[in-house]
Image (tube, rainbow, N blue to C red):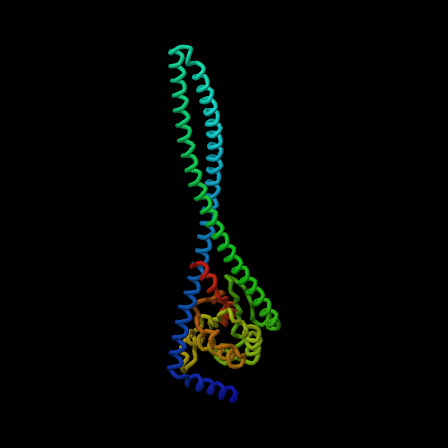
Length: 331
């Protein structure tokens, strides 16, 4: 009993020795992390909206291309008919000229009829020629527009295919990483550790009972081993960012010293996890961000002991780098 009392006093003395500057730095880090998380969420929504808009544009262009192609076919058919009629009129004109020459000696009345008929035929022929030139002009315009749309359609299809290829590549990489993480942490599966893939990210959730004694920010031996096993799998991943979030239940924090409430506790626990993964797990410090969510993002009701145990957790969120996707969209 005395040993437990002495250990408790030592923990409280160590907690009370946390400088206020470090505490403020942690607060600032948490706020920055929240802003980065929100920006990433907004970027993800923008990416989805831009991809949907690009697909809608592609569908619209495809429809216009089909309509223009149909119009071009109709114009070509009309032009062929007009040319055929022009040829027939040319033949009739020739026959009339021959008849006129033959009939010059047969009387002026018949000649006048032939001249009138010839004039009417020539006027119709001129009108047909004008119509043919107009059709050719329209056809050239339609063909140019058709070629332009065809080029634009190919460009849009190429961009969509490139986007879908990169998205598929990212999803495959995330799935592969998730499988490797699950395999590495298989021994902790029934001890409050889960690995999930959702919204294009990997969520590694560790219940507090696996990592910390009650009310403490010091990671125990078993929890440290789980963190080091995870760090070994992900430390060489250069194309992801990692957010470590601390969460608590709604029970008020009754400790003393620098930790005043659940929000402070969640921040300090997240920071403790990051320090182990960087100092002992040899991870690049620029890859990780520590943040505290306190009691404000529960995953289970806080009215049961089981629900509270689920809410007291550390979530390690691995997010793939989407810079290349944004570059393609903004081109």
